[in-house]
Image 1 (tube, helix red, strand yellow):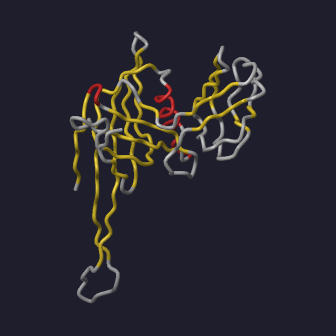
Image 2 (cartoon, one colour; image 1 turned 180 degrees about the horizontal axis):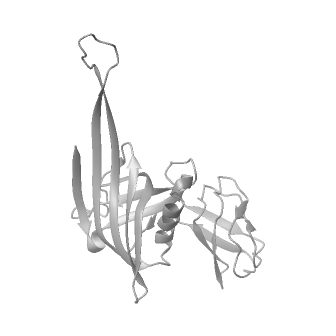
Image 3 (cartoon, one colour; image 1 turned 90 degrees about the vertical axis):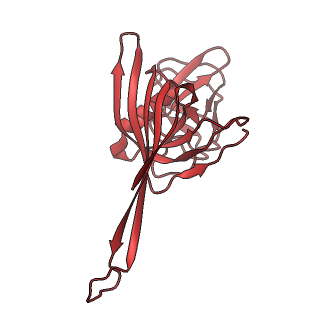
Length: 232
């Protein structure tokens, strides 16, 4: 059996994404990375104060020293307590102390269409052999899917997270997703779903205006976590 729930359109659609470290499906948290001694040009590692949380490989981070900014991309997962970030070679130097604030729950902008699909199937199983062939057990499997269509710039940081996951899905790279319905009157957040997913069937269509149209699906196995509407 399968049910599809239409959950919103236009600017009411809210979908947030974060890359997950390999083998980790826990809900990500915000992390601040402080590089106290500056960052050199063409550097492939950055020394930082001990991280208070994990940051997945492929995540863009922007270091800011108060005057200039430098965006880097992690090449490896950074774990809780790590003091070194492994990055793609930096394009320029950044002097002095700088900070990168990693926002785990980052909204995908430009959404025009979203649906939440909850699928389940039941398989009868024979636990004990019976001469008459009766089946005395059942296993219910479940999956869920969030198809998404959006118009955005390919430089959008949240989109880059999903694109990286789709490009590296065979390595096990997953996306943690928060989906929110339009809230009831008087509330700030609507009902929704959250959990670990795989980015599937990504299609990026580039327009002459530099806006790209993107469609993909985020699919999770098992039961998603249901979130309730709230004031904040």
